[in-house]
Length: 195
Length: 399
Image (tube, rainbow over all chains, first blue to last red; front, side, top):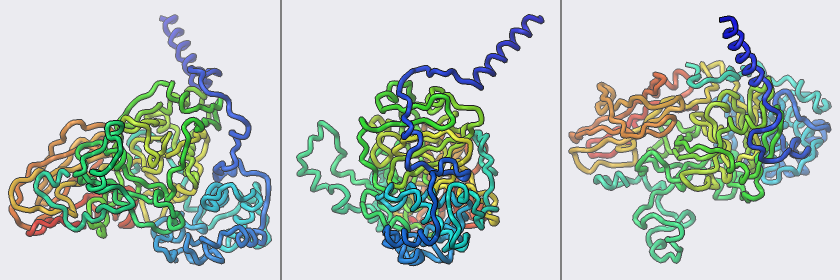
């Protein structure tokens, strides 16, 4: 009886070890180890914690120059308020002239619009991976920090001379930060739908 | 075509997918084609079902490529649970499919793992694979009072057999580190669509798919690789998949910026699973009944939560409901057909259907759905769709 219990305990202990520490080598031994460049891609998405933000910095003043010289206005308008692309600055209820006004539709979608982003990382990350459209990779990290600072300033969130970098960006207090509710889905299970 | 076969002629509503020069050949063009139809088959020149392309809106105005347009599946012309790949709905945020050479494409699995890994497509295809039939539905696929046809209100759902490697197999290969609770699935499209997925879902039934209905995944559906996240909103099913990053927080990428933000006006903002839903596809808005008499009511039901257990149909404006027949197969997280024999007396009435899934969840009315979300145009638009039949046989949206 006692040896059976011990055996069961031993098996349980082994399976716990196996679950916590997967074998160092894979089962199928296919593929290769990524290169350092593949592990830190230029177009990496950045989460709210700022994990992966590159070195570099920028201010709203520099951002205004970048906005003017890198062609942002050709879609978003001379000052980011005019469109025809998504409105980046100004009244969140205002719709883009083209109709949908994705960024502007505060009345429909909480969280939409630069001002409504719960974290400044969303703005940085989107400019970095998505802009300028079809010319992604064209902006340097300094330029992305500068554009982020420019749009945060134009939306009244930071001061004109505040420097945005990997440390300061994650500390920016976005106005709608309190509406962010940490999702309950880390332990998602089938059927978990709320109501 | 089902509608045609039983004596129904399309009304004006169907001009949405009438032939247009830029989007496929009409009957005449097919007859004079010199294409080798023995090498790769074609449908009959009399079969003309087409996707309805959607107007360019808002921030998609910047995308000039016609292949970047979104398109809806002509649901009333579907003859089973599988959507032909060429008619699968498309929603790519205005981005045309990237032109990916499969010999160059790599899938990287990295982040909080013991052994980060880069796989070529050939290597991925050497791993054990499964084939499963699942629907994918856009989160915006919501019935609206403005919709004039079945497609306008419901055409952003399609169902395919997906073949690929279970994501759990790949995660076993790399060894997930303790504390990892999320994945970021990364696409290779112009604006790098990426979506955070809870680890428990990733380990349960997610597929890295390279096959769709027996062929390689179509370019608009993510060629060469698409993540299939059964039952979750369409935007989780990341196309042109190039990366799986194992992480410990949701990333809040641009396309999920509002996913975790709770609107004080609404009870809940961040379900991931599509709720139980059904819609009558015949008779449906845009069609017309040519005479009184016998018809078979046809429809489709589905749930992101599991299997369709029951579909009820009302032909009297919701006063009484009858259980519809569910022709096999009724698969988990797949489109499921339903049918009900019906004799129309030629009088005005309203028909509608209501789905219950095997978790016991019931499809809500439009009013209940709007009340729950606080707004009428809410995501997860799984409200009941009533169709009004006028006494001259026209079928209209009754919302």
